[in-house]
Image (cartoon, rainbow, N blue to C red):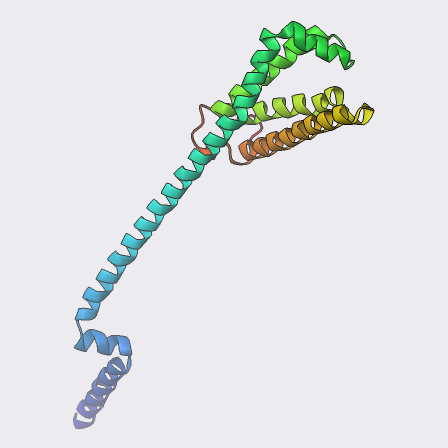
Length: 201
């Protein structure tokens, strides 16, 4: 019995000594405040996370506003041009005919409708990718048909046509970038009406 008692006592001491060897066990035994500190740290971490998410959401809203302003500025040019196609059809058709455009009057009317529809789609964000594609499809042929500066012999006329050609090509590039953004991000772009993308990936 004495040997058994001694053996049990040794095991008990050994077990207690192992507990105190662990820094965590030692801290919990001697410093119960650690539990309170851990709780406060968790609350602080959650507060930081909440504040960070709010900051991200705020930045996202700012980018959405910037993208909307960009769409408005981009669309206004085409809306004005489209209205000109429909209100000054005779004059614009005469100019198109002088450039060798077939069915000049019908082409002027159709192109006016296309760019107005395209601009409105980009502006509102409703099928914005389709709108951007319509504008690009208008701009690229127009650049080559209406502003073939390499055919001009007069230096001034050549320079003016080259400026117009470069403008149309640059706008077509911008339209394709907008097309990509609508296809890639769709309604995640924010500040759009209805479905943003027809060709959503």
